[in-house]
Amino acid sequence: MEGSSSEIISSTTDKVNLTEVEGVVQSWMIDYYFASLCRLFRDRSAPEFRKTLKLFESIVDDLETCSHRSDHPTQRTICCFLARVMDGENLEVRYDHVSRITPLMSALPIWESLKEVSDSDLHAKIKTLLIVQSVAVCVKKGDSKLANETLKLLEKETELPAKLQGKLTTIVSKKDAYDQLLMNFTFDQLLENIDTFLNTFSKEGSSVFLFEAALKVVQARHERSEKTSSEQDGSERTPSSTESNKPEDNEEQVNPLVLNIRPKRKLFSKQIHHVWKPETAKKEQTTRKRTSIYKISRRSSVCSDLQSNVSVTSQPRRKWTTEEDRKLKAGVRKYGEGKWRMILNDFEFDNRTGVNLKDRWRILKKTEGY
Image 1 (cartoon, rainbow, N blue to C red):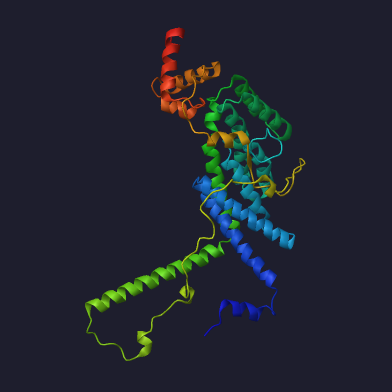
Image 2 (image 1 turned 180 degrees about the horizontal axis):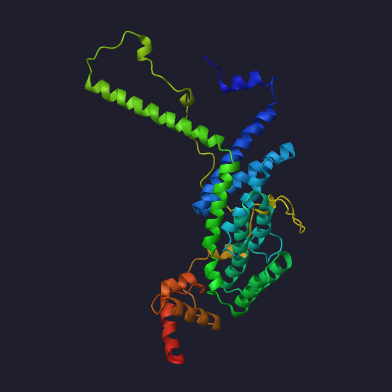
C-alpha cells in the first residue's frame, strides 16, 4: 500500500527543498483565488469579492515575505484595479492617502500600468471610460466640488484630449448628470469592457490547476455515487442472482482521487467583521511618485460607518433645499410625475421617501406653476 501524505513528505524532504514545494502550492492557490476574483467581479458579487480579495492579498503578502519576490505581479495589480472599480460609485471609500482621490481616480494609474497586457484598442476605450466616469460619479452624487477637483487632477496627471476636457468642464460647470457624453460612456459599459479584458487575460496567462484538480475529484465522487446507487438498485431487483466466482469481478473500482475524502470543514467564520484595514496594504508608486505594488485594502470614512449603525426612527422635518428641489424637477422631467421610486433611485435625497417627493412636488406645482 502507498504511504500516507506525511510519510511521502518525510521521504522526499532530503531530495528537494520543501520551501520550494510550498511555494508551488501557494502559487496554485494564488491562481485559484485570482480566477475566483475574476468570476465574482463578472457576477458583480461585491461582498464575496471583498472576502476573497482579503484571502488573496494575505497569500500574496506571505509569499513575498518568505521569498522576497512575487511571481504574480500582474495578477496582484489586476486585483488592485478590480477592487477600486468595484467601489467606483462609492465616494466614501478611499484607497489613497489623499482624501479627495476617488476609487476610480485611484484605478486610473493602475490601468495605465497594465497597458502591456491588454489590447491597445480595448485599453484606450477603458481609459476613456475611467476618465469620464471619474467625473460623472461625482456629478451624479451631487458633489460638484469633488467633481471639479477630480477634473483638475485629471488635467494635471493624465494626457486628457482637449475636446474631452472641454466637454467635461461644461458638464461640471452645468452640473448636468444627463449630458449625452455621460449617456454614451456609462459605468455599466466600463464594467462590461473590463469583463472582456478579464476573459482575454484568463485565457492567455492564468493557470487554474487547483480548480481543475478539484473538478476531477468532484466528478469522480459523483461517478462513484452513481455507480453505488445503480448497484444497490440492481441487487434489490435480483436478490437471488448468482455472484461471480472471480474476486476481481466483485471488487469495486475505486478512483484513488476519491480515497479518504473527508467532509469539508469550515476554515473561516461566516461572521463578517470590519472589512479591510488600510495598514495591511503596501504603499503605492508609479512614475508619478506612487509605488509599483498597489495596495488592495480600502478605508471608509468613520462617519459612514456610524451612519450605517443608526436606526432610522422618527426624524424632525427638514426643510427642502434648493439643490433637492433641482433634483426633484430634473427627476420629473426625466421620468414623469408619479415615478417617485425611479427618481429616488436616480437622485440622492438624504433618506426622503416617495411620499415626501409627492408632497413637495404638489407644493412646487402650486408655487411655481408646474
